[in-house]
Image: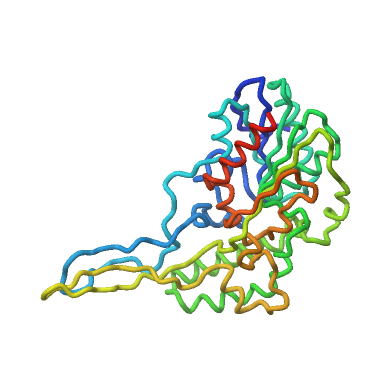
Length: 337
């Protein structure tokens, strides 16, 4: 098996750091997020890191300027920092790979991880630390059942240790297309419908069902704390994954002319719009404000026997790249070292 591995060598006296990506992702989530796509590969990652657009000043004129945008998904960051690069700059050997079957069974990814670790173990005298995002954290836990004494730590970021119920909601989410489509023109409507269908197909995937709370995989994961492994977990509590804005003119009269300001009004956000189609008694913690990151609940993100656990007011994507989160995890890793 020839794996697509990204490896940067550091000091052999420091633990090597092995990064494990989540469901449907690839190595770029750690190395170069600008190339990453999410939710079934349909949408660029940057959309999920967006902020409300700034007010635009179009200057003085008698009438509103022509040819301006109608909608926006927010302002996206120009540069995205990663824990992978932070730790490499600190002198650690860092490695990740693209899983050959990113939506395949976890056991397949565990076999690939074993091959990666055999390579990495030759580059360090200080053992290895596994860092897994989302499903990647469960891949790390499953590997630890082998009780590999070279593993010194496991860090999981927004991993569903108790499962995620999002796959259950597919039947309720299907009507979203009919709710949203009337807001758009013909071309935009077709693109949006296609995107929603792609996301719903992803939510129905066999791999995602492996992450359901009652899945055979989670029931079979009979692990527990290992003496020589330090466990850290982190989760998010802001479920807002995506907000769509509609641009609106807000003119201010100045003499005989008007200064034309373009402001962004929120049209809808995901998951808030889910409340229109999901019965309240079925509304899951994953998408409740203060309870989840949009895909995984804060409670589920905690390793049951974690030495340290952190919750952050961020969504499932933001938590990977937030500078404050990265700084905390770097300090934690330096403590293990």
